[in-house]
Amino acid sequence: MNPKIMYEVVPPSKRSSEQYREKVVNSLADSISRMKSVDILDIPEIVEENYCGKPYYRNFDSREFASILKKKIGKEIVINKVVPHFSSKPKFKEWLDETTENYRIDKFVFVGGTFKMAYPGPTVLEANKLAHSNGLIFGNIAIPTRPNEAESLAAKTAAGCSFFTTQILFEPEKISDIIKEYAEECRKQNLKPSKFYLSFSPISDAEDIEFFEWLGVHINERTKSRLMHAGNAGLESVRIVQEAYSKIISQADGLVPIGANIEQVTLHNLQLSENLVEWFTHNG
Image (cartoon, rainbow, N blue to C red; front, side, top):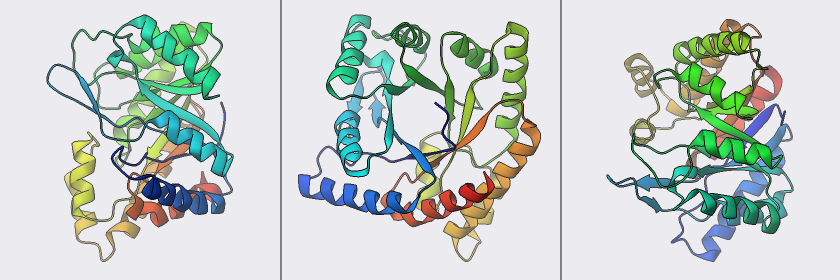
């Protein structure tokens, strides 16, 4: 998979009415139709875990949502799946077969669990190996603040991962270091580096900052102050993203292939995410 720009859209709540879901899809379809440079849609799985690692799904099923979007928009789709939550490894295989055969979805991002514990389902590496043996295209998540991340990403590449989407980025330093370390690991192991889709999203207000930090996004105090003291936090966040991307690209120095994954996260940031896509179309 080698698109230049990926666009991530969040499924609505599973409690939402069919009428509301249709409204969301129509809004997204109108927006995405204007973003000619978006090659593929990325559908995350929104899941929370309790202290035992048991999942709770608040949002509409990503496969169902992807199917609706594909019919409406006609773009390629990649869906995210948190794989350790399956009750067993064979259940993951069943889900994978069902998804490819019944939903005609064959591109994935496999995601690990939140906690360091023994989950019943497969690890990301085990999911990678199974999907790779089935000839599927898949990626994983790169989290710059995670210990030993470069070595882990190289192991996932060796297991067939062809791309990474990063955690949402506002600060360029950590991901730049990870890219350099990962490229060196690939050189040592004679691996072809996988593509990195650098994830960015606009921020409109203090509530957005709070939510992003709850998601685990790193936003330093200087960036938060800059956002909160700006006349328009949304437009300022777009400028911050542009600066961060430019710094990452200059430091990556062609070590790995790079694309952009633009996330709207919430519908109130839809127009700002369009602005980001427009900028990346001409500068990415």
